[in-house]
Image 1 (cartoon, helix red, strand yellow):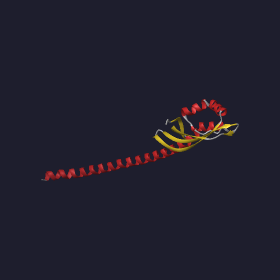
Image 2: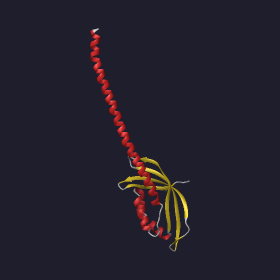
Image 3: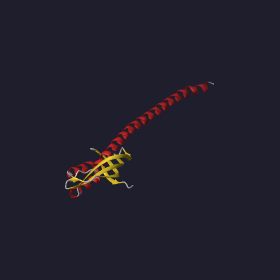
Image 4: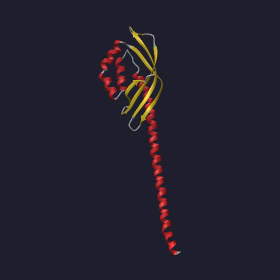
Length: 175
């Protein structure tokens, strides 16, 4: 009997130490997982909210034109853009300004609704779809004509820059 009790005198403390290490390890793993999930969630929520707000504002900028100040409209478009869209706006700036001056019309957009369709907070990219009412009227001899309202759905690809979210591509969504 004394041989069996000697084994338990050794095994019992070893098992107790192993159990304590397992509990501490599980606790540490749980805490680090919770901490990482909490930080990541807060960052994702903040990125989602700021990207959605930016999509609403940028969609309005890109669909609005003041024919009395076409250069200001062009600068606003360029300030809203990044990447290939910004390059295109800069490259074709003279063409766009010529078109605005040749056929002047007002265009003022308002957001009806907007939603993010994709978000990668880590990479700083997002996609959004915006529903807009765009009120337009042609200017004839400097006087606005009758207004028409068009409903547009615009898809925006957003990139987070040092200046905030900007549009890297834009296009109409077919009905």
